[in-house]
Amino acid sequence: MFKQRYSIKSLLLMGIILGQLLTVSAAATPPPPNAPLPVPDVLFYGTATSNGQILQSGTVEVVLPRGKRITSEIAPIPGTNYNYAFSVPLRIFDNPNTATWPPDAVVAGDILRFTLDGRNAFYKDAQNMDVQNFTIPWNAMGATYILNLRIANPDDYMMGDVNANGYRDVADALLIMRYSVGFIAGTEEFPPPQGKPYLPLCDVVRDGVCNAADAERILQCEAGVPGIPCLPADMPPIITQPPGAPSLFRLQVAPTSGTAFTRTVQVVANDLQSSLGAASLKLLYDPAHLTVDSCAAAPATEMSRGVCFAAPNAGDVHLNYVAVNGIPPDTVLAELIFAPVGGYDLGQLANALDLRVNNAFGLNGAAFIWPEAPPRYLDNVLFLPLVTRGQ
Image (cartoon, rainbow, N blue to C red; front, side):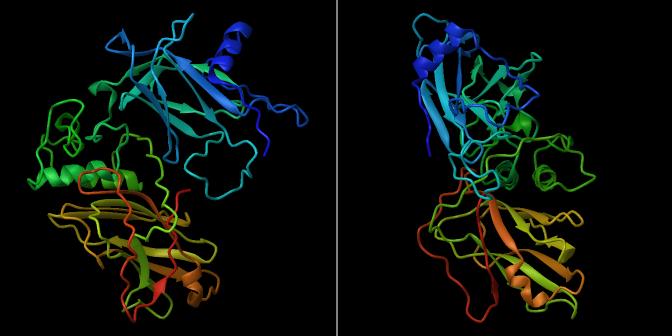
């Protein structure tokens, strides 16, 4: 792979001298097929502020869509009004059809987020709207973008984002559940300490209280259940399982597996050494061979909630699950009934399902730390192959 590199300062100077300071927009016409390749990095710089004051120190961080982060120190750039600059390497030489990207991969269409001193940051887009997302356009290679970043305040966050990290997901549902049973206290301090829900953002269902109903609504919204009133929310970065790490969940055929023409498949927790409090899963299948007759999460209790949703012929099933005491080993999170399409042989089901962990969180709502020890498997149980990877 050949990749021409320039330093951040030289790119910044070139952008200023040549007047190639671009706004957040993309051209409509792609370059000719034989055009020379530009520098395959995109440069960001601007002024970082907090409460209207220019920051003299600290860190600016870009959150890549697959989990990796790029950090740069905040400091005045001589001869300019800017105080931060960093470049994001783009994967322009890779096969665009690659199914699994590494954590540091950034390609056209990806969404970046920014933080200042660990807190979410916003900027003004071309329409003068406060946004925290930047979508990489197809022509970003070698481009320069000015983003004046500011630290977010409570009004910038959507209802349900009780950990104020910019995403509404199962981690928020877990904190709400633990608060509703009295395991943790809520807070009105902003930003909220880790492991405590920010109560002014809790009442998703608008009934005046913060309880399990709000947690369940979040699980439904993030699973895509139709007919549920949900504000649109950005999806968090997909967690990539470390190489060699044990699988958190497995698939198995249920002891009573439906009729002669269907199979019941269970999503089951493996035996882990560390506590797993919440997870967002996706089960992929080929709709040309299979249909999902039903998808049922484990019954809701005071200590646990689950939502399972399969859109008709979509080829995927979404499962969100939280447990305030942690998810015990061998817990059945959901049962799915599959039926064949066009005479498909259900005996091949083991090779037709792909289970992925999109996100997983510990009991404090922080990203799950993968254990090193292998999981315990039961004897005399038919297991389906399990793949846990980001997409």
